[in-house]
Length: 99
Image (cartoon, rainbow, N blue to C red; front, side):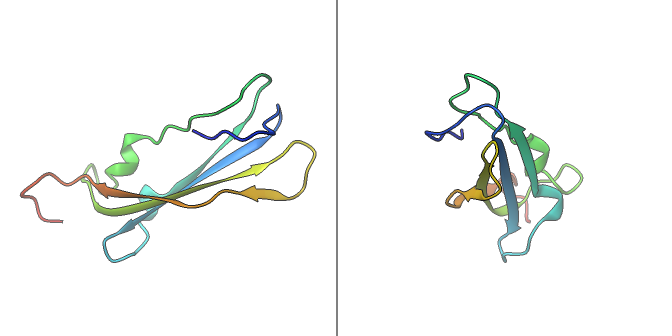
């Protein structure tokens, strides 16, 4: 979930999800960005990554990683605030099945 002290209505939060195979090649069909505009009274927002992002090859999984980070464009501002990157290991291939 994204939460920051100055969160106010009208802020635009954008989450970037960059999927890569074990060799570091980007998997375009498992990568994407998602934006959300904060509404009054919110103190956090949870992005939900669709399960299809973990099975990009016609329903087949992959081994690799996903790097996620977000930006915030505060209401009335022109400069983006950038979060730190977070990496997650992805292994959606069943045991005994080769990648």
